[in-house]
Image 1: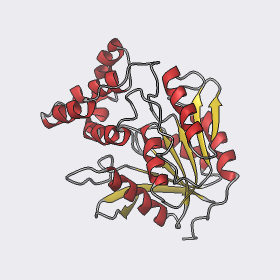
Image 2: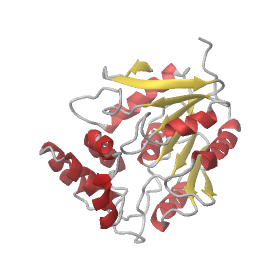
Image 3: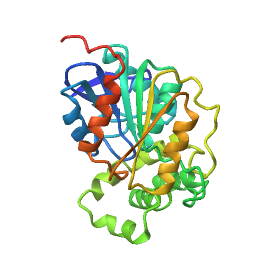
Image 4: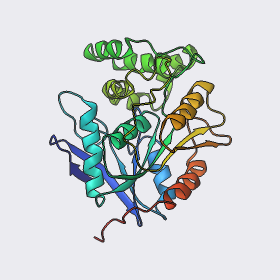
Length: 274
């Protein structure tokens, strides 16, 4: 494990493996290096890239700050890019894709950007997230009801059926999910008003100049696929790709070749030799 210091003094834990151009993987809600898709994906990408996986602030071995702002997470990613050599490819999944998108729009030196299913709700193909979802989540967390916060997020944010949400507390990973429940408020802050069923703005991400790939799974819900397609439409020159047979829980074996081909088509500096 390595650590890098973010601009506000928060220590961010990361792993680096492989060789070649720098690539940073950004996790979604309730995921970190030891819990989520980035580790298995990095195993398949490290033969082509110097892959950096990290614990977003408040998770795993990374530290946190008393208050949260999206800008601080953008600074975390900037610190990692600096550590990786000054520029990097970036891949984000789910709400991590939304974070990576904001970082790219803020002008970080991202060589090319790949986004898998940012959970934008852009039409009426599913109920919108409640406008007060963030406030309700913060209230539950302040009362120490971490499990209730997770269940609220899974039902109203992810839109899982009630029976599935009720059964989650019997899953082996339930305690791990509760351990990072406080970061749900972070992801909901990142998503902002993009889950209320409104079309994506055409003038929000105009600062992007790098190549962008927006991908979704052919078996994912219609609402999240519609959001991915619409995002590709509003981003300048973005490419859209649908992965056959995949869902939001995309298999690394299906995603890795797509990312390898996309990132290999664009130059990024290799990590300097140790």
